[in-house]
Image (cartoon, rainbow, N blue to C red; front, side):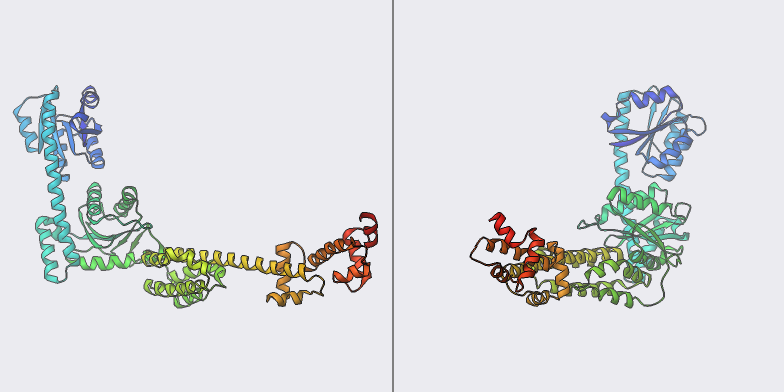
Length: 513
């Protein structure tokens, strides 16, 4: 569908045009309307319709003046005139104003359809020519920025000035636009995004060019005027990139207005500005030579070394807890990206090698062994690197916690087995700790944590249960029962039995057996 804007000062005529003409059958969609040329011009600059159908005679600003302004500002936009005056003077004025068609009132639908069919062809031709011109301009601009030698760059600038003479005396505002890659998604293809940039510049009324200067990176130069002197243009590009492409865009602006011949300097300064993105994050506008980016005194070596020292199996929780403070310090000290990536990668690889001693870690990690390294190498910001590292550290810590939990439960089961099979012996916590290679204090804590009672309480429970079984054999004396469940002192056994069961051994035998 082609977009159409209607301009008619008579309310009834405008309503008829909007609601009673089968525009959709002609492949047109009405995107707006106005009742005078001035109001129409305000909306046309925002809506950028393909075609404007306008009355010739109107108050405030007539159609001829409106057409002249459209022709001066929007080369590819087509104008069709409506008039109730079948006079040669108006026809001649309309043709001189660049009209693509001329219709008399009242509008004949068949005639309108024929005119609009021709207008569609002109719109398509204009779009093709515009795209071809843009492609040529941007190709010359790319040579001016990235050309290997001075003669090639100078020739490219000369070609641009030859096509746009005003460029020769103009200064340009320039900046690098960088798109953040999301997950495994690839950034937009070069050509579609270049066209998007040019369309956005045109929509903002800015004259400029865009050159690809790296994967997902474009250097845009715009003639320095009201459309480029503030952040509005660049924020519009960022907003449109998010809306149309689903990408977060960051802008690094050259700190000076420069001539086209200084294109390499534009790129160099814009790269310095966009470098702050690594430390301070995406989705912002950075300026070269800006003092808005505070830096800490001192070396980045100390916070990096302190963090790397924590990347050990026994200190992972510390590493996770302290990551924010260490990375904040690295950002303030402007740690070089390559140094951080290489040394962090080496430390994380050593951690993985330690974890690989566990067979189930190797099985768990095998399908994605190098994913995190790839993620770190692609990360565009320090925050991204921290996030990827934190994911691996968190997973490793969780894995080790599970292994520790499994080991603790196994140790407690071993101790329980000893208590239930060797209850008749003189068992102490020190003895049990030696059997499982733990410290006595740690074993006391662990057993209470897992079983809800002390080792001594559990042993007593085992001995009393065994004593209850032995008391059913009346051939055994109380002294014999006490001895068989680990008590040399019969009186002490009876005291423990009475406190645990609620009756003495003899009372239990006489009452329940």
